Image 1 (spheres, rainbow, N blue to C red):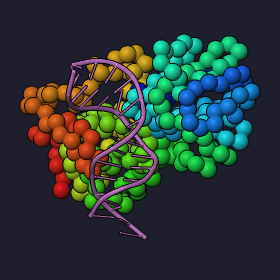
Image 2: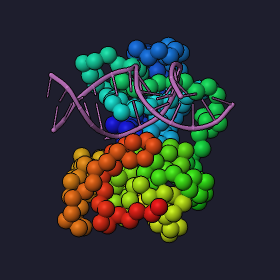
Image 3: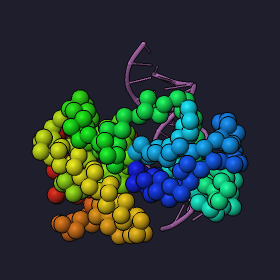
Image 4: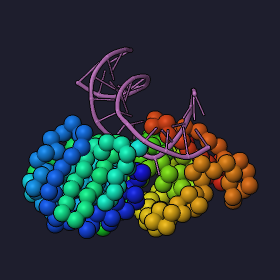
Length: 243
DNA sequence: TATAATGTTTGAAC
DNA sequence: AGTTCAAACATTAT
C-alpha cells in the first residue's frame, strides 16, 4: 500500500468527496473520530506517505504503515479503522494509523520535502544530504524529511538506475551522482504512479526483488543494509561503492 | 505453516 | 542526556 505514489492515487480516487459533508462516522480508531460527523471536507492533501483529510480547524492524518488498505464505496469483511459516510458514498480505511492535527496544516508540513509535490525543492534535498555525509545513501533516501514519499521499492530502483551501491556514504558520492539521484527520485516516483495505475508496477522492477542484473547478467546481492536494515537488491559489478 | 514484507513510533536499556 | 534497539502494530503472499 504505502510509498508516496500510492497515496497520490488514493487522493485522486477520493476527489469526488471534496467539499462534501461527512454525515456519519464509524471505526475502531482510538482517536476521537466522532468529531468528524457533520463536518465538511475542505481538501484532501498528501505529504509523502501521509494522507491528509482537511477540515476547518483540524486535519485527519492517515498513515498506511506497512499493511494499511482502503475501499471506496465498498467494504471489506474486517472492521474499519475509520469509515466516512457521505450522502452519495463512503470511504473506508483499514489497519492504518490515524491522528488528528489541530490548526493550520501548513504549520505541520514542509511541502518542498515531498518529491511528488509541486513545491518539491531539489536544492533543499541536496543541502540536507550535505549535512549527513557519514550516512549510507540507502538510509538517506528513506529519510522522510529529505525524500518524503520515497520507500524501499523506490530506493532500490533509483540506486540501480544511478549505478550507486546502497552502502555508499553520502559524502563520498560525487555531486553529479547526488544530483542525478535526486532527479531520479522524482522521475521514478511519477513512473511508479503511472505503472501502479495500470496495475503493471512490478513488471517494471529492475532491482527490487530481482535476482539477476539485466545489465551484467550477474547475480544480485540481497542484503539488509544501513541503520534502517531494509532490503537492498544490488549489483556489485555495476553499482559503485563510494566509501 | 512459518516467514517476511512497499513503515513508523514508542519506550526501555544502555 | 543522548543514542540504540527491540517491540509493537497488523495483513497477506509465498
